[in-house]
Amino acid sequence: MANPISSASPHLGTSPGTLVYVGPETKLDVCVRRIEYNEQFIEETELKTIAECRIQPMPENQVTWLDVDGIHKPEVIAEIGKLYNLHPLLLEDVLNTRQKPKLDQYDGPVVFVVMKMLEYNPYTREVEQEHVSFVLGPHYLISFQEERTDDIFTPVMERLRASVGKTRRNGPDYLLYALMDLVVDNYFLVLGKIEEDLERLEDEIFRAARTRNQNELYALKRDLSVIRKSVWPLREILTSFIREDEEDDLVSANTLLYLRDVADHIIQVLDTLDNYREWVASLLDLYHSTLSTRMNNTMKVLTVFSAIFMPLTFVVGIYGMNFDNMPELKWHYGYYLVLGAMAVIVVVMLLWFRRKGWLE
Image (tube, rainbow, N blue to C red):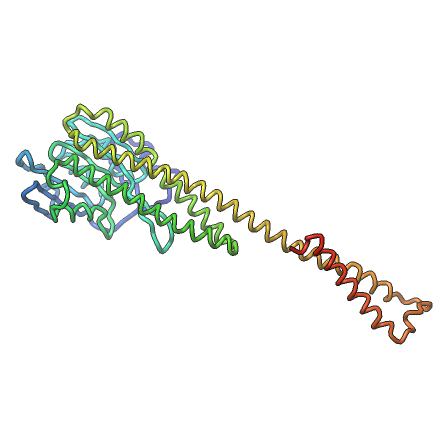
């Protein structure tokens, strides 16, 4: 989720590889599932103890997926790291929800990926992010996600249960691709919601700009910056990984083709982000321009009224003087004559203003 970033870090002063959870507090328990499958069968197990997470001997064509839902307990992550012989620096990044997206390769061989799952909250109209990470090894994949009320990997799990698609027929590297692709596809869903907000704001600003429109635009600008920080690192790291991993047995050539497709999607997301950021900037300019135009129209109306009342005030000022020798004050129709003259002055001035184009 979208968490406030503090200037202080629990890692300050600790040695590298020290396992400290960095993220929002949660009271939920850590849930660990093991999913074992191949093309012929699939078995899901809710693990009650950490010892059950141990790698079991399995046929060569069988895949083990260990899904860890909850990273707020360092002792649990440490035990899983011991069972799979994972590097302490890798586990440190798993526990740090502020870690930027990255891709590292460790001895084992092991591929470690950090990503940010983004979701659009329709109630607050904010983009929330969740820290997810993956560990790919021979015949197994471990996924770590922050504890939530819903499982973000449910669509992939449903495909495995239904044996739909290629996931059941391929290895853990293809499962890694499927999960990464799910995260990236969710970026498009979030951008779609932001596009709806931008279209709505554009329409509202054209009709009548309000202060809340400016606040929403700045909120969208902030959300787009959050998305960019979550997506931009993936472009370079995924491209480099595909180029360097072409001769590695951990990721097959077939999966590398699919990972290239993910890299293309990331480029599309970044291009869309740039377009939306320009859109927000243009809407902010439109907002200020609309306010300026409205202010100018208001000032024009006030100026017209002031200009009309200036000669009227002059006339009233003259006849408001208390001099004895003012013949007009003795006329029987003097009052009506002055009112008529003032009305003629107003009509003549309005016609003149209109001819000049000042009333358009």
